[in-house]
Every structure is written in C-alpha cells, then in structure tokens.
Image (cartoon, rainbow, N blue to C red; front, top):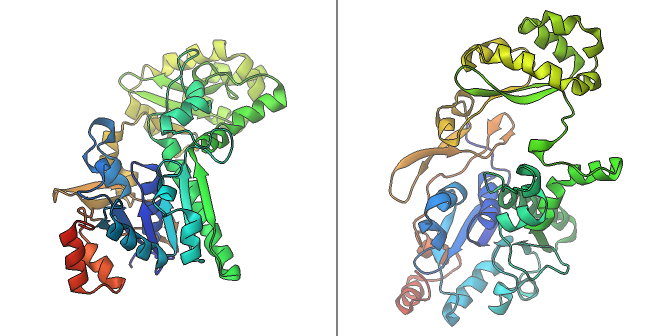
Length: 390
C-alpha cells in the first residue's frame, strides 16, 4: 500500500531557511501536500552548512520541489507573486518584515489570493519583542528551557533543535485549523507560530508547578523527583535509565531484582515515603545494577511494564530495531548517496506517512513549476536568460 496522502492536491509555496520553516513544509509534504521550495539563486545556503548544521537540509527538505528565484529582480518578484496567487498555503520564516519589504507580505498577497493561508514562523508573537531576531538557542535561553536542562548556574540548551521543530509543528497545527475554517468561510488567514512562546509552552509545567506550590522548579539535574527511582544507573558497562512510577511497579521491581529487604519494609510501600527515603534506597539499587551488564538489565526489564531506556546516541539509531520496523526511510542526497533518516512519526489508517524522499537539487523543478503556472517555453527561457530564475 502507498503512504496515506490526506493533503493531496494542497499547493504550498515555501520561502524558508534553516530548520523552523522547512520543518513545516516537511510535515505537510509527508501528509501529501505538494511543496514548492523557493530558493535564492544558487540554492539555499542551509545546504552548505557544516558542523551541527550539516544535517538541517537533508532532514527537513526532502519530498519538496525546488525553484530558484532572484527576488531582487522585477521579473523574479513577478514569478513569486504568480506562485503565491496559485497556492493554498505560504510558509515563511525570515526576519520580521523581510517579505513585506519585497511586496510579498500577507496583506498584499491576501488581496491577490483571498483563500491564501499565510504561515509565518517567527521568533516572537506580537508584543514588545516581536521585531527581535531569535534563534532556537535564544528562545531556549530566554524561555527557561536552558535553565531547566543544565546544572544550577550552568544553563544548557537541549541537544537538538527542539524549539525550531516544535514551533514548526505548531505552525502545521495552525495551517490545518485554518484549512478547516476555510472550508466554511472560503477565506484564508494569517497563522503565526513562534520560538519564544513555544518554549514557554514547553516549560509551562514548571510555571504551573510554581503557581501551584509557590516554590520555583529546580533545574532538572537538581530537581526533587516525583518518584524515588527515576534515574540513570551505571551498569558494568553502559548506563541505563529506570523509572518506578507506581506502587505496583515498586513491587514488581523489588521482585525482579531480589530486593526482598526493601519490599519487606512496609514503610516504603507508598511512593511519597520512598521519595523521602531516596538516600537510603538508591545506594542499594545502584550496587545491584552495577554488578550487571546493560544487556542483562534490559533482559530483566523488557516486558515487565517498568519504564527503562538504554542511553542511546544518535548514530546508534540507524541500527535500532524499532526504527528499522518503519521509522527510517531511504533518502537520496544531493550527492546521489542513499542514507536512511527518521520518517515523520505518524501512522494513519494503519500505514506510516511519507513522501518522495529525494532531495531536490537547486532549481531542479523550475521549468516544470513555471509551466504549471502557464508560462510557455520561450518565457521560461527568457527568465532564465535574464537571471530572474534558475
């Protein structure tokens, strides 16, 4: 069976770079939408990032078509306007006002295409900060996530672009809601998602903790856990996380690991009592765990209902049996090399969603996209000759 395509026929034009905006288009492409990715002449510079940015483009831009346009030229702008006029959705994540200065802002484009859903992915929603430039890391630092992740006094960003990607997901949610509303009104609208407010939503549980208790949440490495056993334990070789989050699981855990003495202590039968006794309980458990290999611990825990997790590394996930069962898909890079990267983590109607997994070379689809707009071959050749498109 082919992958589900619930958004088949939806036309999306994307003016994006880096992660947040492209993540919106990647999810929509996975759901079956046709994405036309507008790149500058020569291609998006995200393609050539190195270091931690080397994976941005292949991860979030597969399944899209590419057209290169010189938006500084009059002819290039005219092409962009034609694309937008014939699209259902526009996605952009450039600095505030960047597309407005080109005449491609929401108000101007909505006049030409009243059904257009215009999704802007920004650093901040309207407010005192709305014109600031933000990045994933800026939002994590401002929004309390870095504070909660690091040790006290050592704010540490999360180890992936979690705010960029989650902000992109909120953009998709807004687009889908706007599409549903358009079914009844016939009109599009502007949707804005942001990095900072996304971060605040993610740390909202810690804000709520303060609101409920009056006590500020401590950074995660220094937190007072809600459970007595909710820790990383060192085995004879590799570490493993184990969580015991109910009284029934405490009984099961004690029986699995031969902790008869701890189970016999009836004062530890309730979770809050175990939390108070963590300093007494944890050394006993650590001594047992460190005498076993990680695989031996996994064998005991697997199928028990107890939450556990070997401490994985990204490069190890290529060989993970769970992901191998459908969570990875073949991707052809610009170089022609084939790799396997994470699929969109959704199943619909019993099937995983997906899309064309080729990465488009810059401008690969220019002629085809323009022909679909009604441009004849002579006009396309003239635009290419003038440098307006590539």
